[in-house]
Image (cartoon, rainbow, N blue to C red):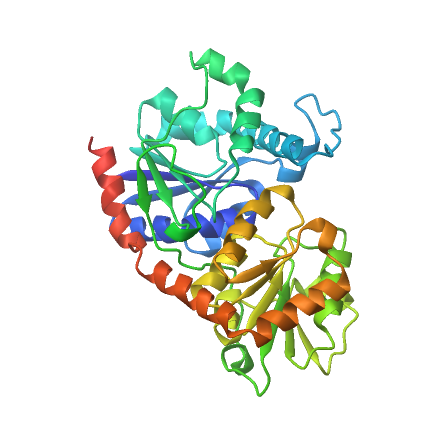
Length: 378
């Protein structure tokens, strides 16, 4: 069987789909991944054959309209969600020509699209094959779908549709106790398996130290041009605690951090390995980072820097496995106090381990391949 997987424009969207795509390939299915140009190295890096479908970047799709006019970021959180949806709609529209050519040449039997890969629904409607929607993390707010439908109105109208196509199956990697709402269609739970870009490991990365280890990260997309000050603020907030501090960041960014090299390790470190040795992670609320920490049973201090990240972060906090500080409460003093509370309150660790056990009970990707086969066979 031929299965086509569509990723988004960030490494996290590639790594979210990798477990199921790899499992399908190992079971003998033909698998191709369709990605933006800049994500091809990440998909091919996990051993998946990859087809580039657009040279555009997510930043361009978010902040430039189809006529290449600059767009400003709305102030309100609800408007921000629709704004994000329209950006993902432009990403879908830009990918469609190449996807149509790929579908005609290769003839997939089934298409699996990431949460916000709206081109997957369009291309399956055109070609008449099943559409599977695959969550990237803890779930996306529905306001993003509404914005995408607005942006894709011309494409939907041309297909005789009045709304976004519905998926025949919803593969959900969010632990059941953290889900926000019923799935928009038949749901297939799947165990989250952490994937990330790997490096040569050093013994300290998988071996705990004498003091509690705290990881700080702002995700893989942080750069010298974007969010360095945000990452520095996170580091400063916990730098004087009696802990071993590890900052997971691209090497170029790590070199620019103002941190005592004798007390702080910084650089590109595979989170799936590092977090098994940590007592706390302080981060931006990214979905893959949150799930990797939950899988490892590590409590979190969540500092979401985008409105869409706040609801899933608050759900983790409501389960007792984290503290979430919204934007209006993100001061250095509050960050430090919250980190100390998590480190000295055993209930946070207990709750994180409960969710880790819940994740382990979900069906493995290899089991979920059977659900894809059944859908494709009707």
